[in-house]
Length: 114
Ligand SMILES: [Zn+2]
Image (cartoon, rainbow, N blue to C red):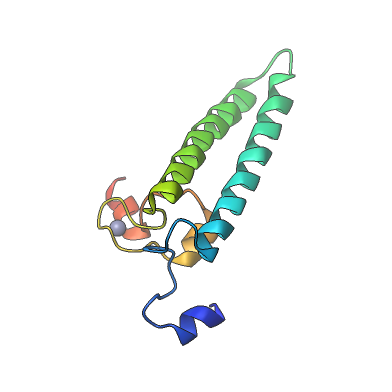
């Protein structure tokens, strides 16, 4: 996917093991912070509704729990464990992190939890 991972095979395609100040970690942090802002903006928008219906309430709950996940992901970035699956400790594929930057687990482990 990236030129870097092709050249430096040892690193692979995942973020796992990158130092907190590394380029990929910085990229992930920017992505998470952007995601955080859009979540907060949408929450504020929804909070302005005087009579929220069920769909709005559900959306708010989703946004709030996503926000918690985003914050937790930012903590993992600081700790240097971001991008590692919480269960098997293997790197979460980069493609998955692009879709869900706050993913805690690889697809396999996540499916096992359902
Ligand atoms: Zn896993």
